[in-house]
Image (cartoon, rainbow, N blue to C red; front, side, top):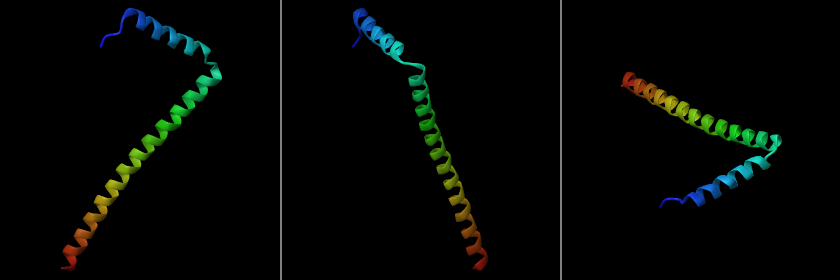
Length: 70
């Protein structure tokens, strides 16, 4: 479904009206929230990777111990 030029102009006008109503404080809050969310997601991802890596290392140590214990 394609948008007509009238619809596009309406959406653009709405976007401009919304953007012009934001104060610098509002923009700072939005950027702060986005930064906090990005930090949380990235930290969760890298902690998951660390946990996976440590689990593989632990499993390998157990296999080595079992191999030597006979």
